[in-house]
Image (cartoon, rainbow, N blue to C red; front, top):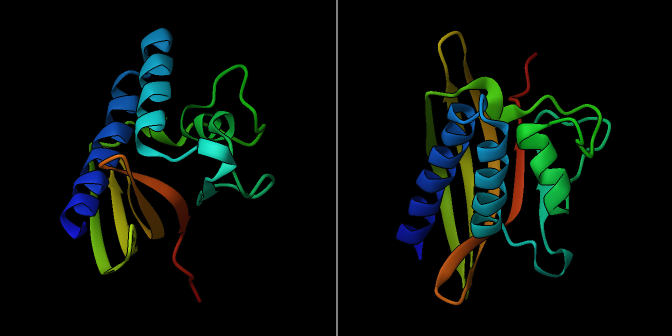
Length: 150
């Protein structure tokens, strides 16, 4: 399962990059994002535990609509603070796992991931939880935060 988690992390990063690439084509962006998030996150039965780094007014997102709002915003965004994190047109996203732990059909990973585009490079801390459902791995826990600064 550890190898599958690493593959999902790569897929997640590539999906966020793809959203930025599609940002000038609203219909394609919305279709891709909807399909991608359905494939990679576990929205079944209100099971998603999602705390994105750039969320303060509505800190926790447990629905697909609020997750889409965080990543691509839009005119009908569900959370008014959202600017569309994926629309920063990231060029590279890399995961640096500190630890991956497997417990039965669940996997947990913590570490840093780095986001780079033409003008910015940021390091973000993450904790993700993964569940194996019908031979595929989905994210059910996503918590990320900007590192503490003194």
